[in-house]
Amino acid sequence: MIGFIQQLYQRIPLGWLQLSHEKSRLLVALSGIAFADVLMFMQLGFQTALYDSNTRLNRVLQTDIVLLSPKARNMQNLSTFSRRRLYQASSISGVKSAEALYVSFITWKNPQTRREASIQVLGVNPEQPAFGLPEINQQSDKIKFADNFLFDKGSRGEYQQVIAQIEQGKTVTTEAENHTITINGLFQLGTSFGAEGNLITSDQNFLRLFPGRQAASINLGLVYLEPGYDPQQVATALRAYLPNDVRVLTHEEFIQFEENYWQTQSPIGFIFGLGVSMGFIVGIIIVYQVLSTDVNAHLKEYATLKAMGYHNLYFLAIIFEETLILAFLGFIPGTIVPLGLYYLTRTATNLPIYMTLTRALVVLMLTIIMCVISGAIATRKLQAADPADMF
Image (cartoon, rainbow, N blue to C red; front, side, top):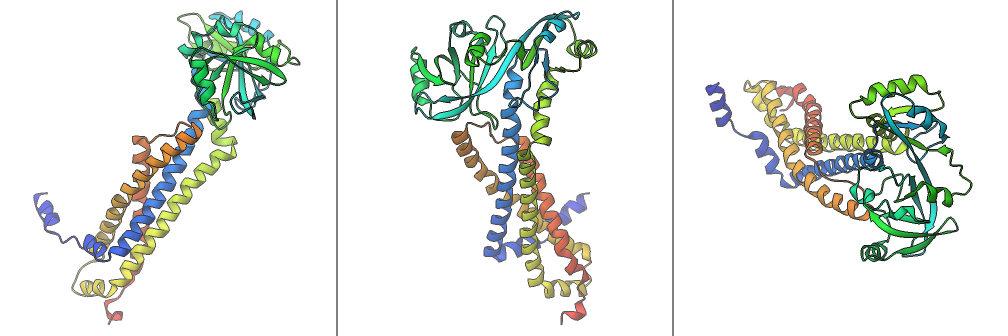
């Protein structure tokens, strides 16, 4: 072992010497790898933001079990089912109560710009906290008044003046669906790929905003359990008891239900995954071109060493030394640039896109694999080289 370490220490770093000799070629290679890394970082960042932003509402719901229509696809495409199922669910052992949640989109006038925009409206029972956000629960009395709403200050758009007025204790009025509404409170949830913002109000205000909507037709049922009962067991009992016109999910299954939609049924999820693959392929092509050029430039030197008795493994070690150097050096700018791009994207869209250690390690491993594959392809010509043909 000691002899191997000494041999490794005394070994001439031929790979690094060859790369650093042609500095322009090295810079081109590092730029190409950095570009591929940036592409992979951005696509993975967008993909994670897609899943995180669209499951935020699901995560903050303060419930043990969720009832929804079997026709529901995701939170932005919910069907309705009969409120009678809540009463039936309440009769199951372990169920403490069951409340309705109304969800819909409206076109409203931005209170600041007076331009029309689409926003998601949630109607809840103000007597039963439906969200695990203290700032919402502490303001539940405000939405009991007619046509009063809480506004999501994390919404996408120009709302700075509106937010400032409400934070000063003032109220703001605007028009929604030919109806005058009042915003008298704020909360922070955030935008998503499916909704640019959120309004929360009471179930009665929700139905007042949609006069054609029947109170008996609800979008979600929030089921609360008695202490000590297992949600999975109660959910199984509910599935056996309730008709098949309602679907029963635990809170964790409801979060996964939303994520599965964006992963498997939404085209945008596929696009982001394809973008990561394209970045990986682009990186392989760029690194292969650099290594192939380097092999061709030094083919006679390699042939001479082969004639002197050096084996193919020695030359493979040189090429793979170059691949690892390129991978690590290219990864550095390929990580720094996305930090700025993440910040710009987060500021412009309010989407939760951040650099994580896990993502950095994933991209580093992809970079190493990318360079190793390129090196393996580039060495095929070197292995087939015959010293007698070189002179």
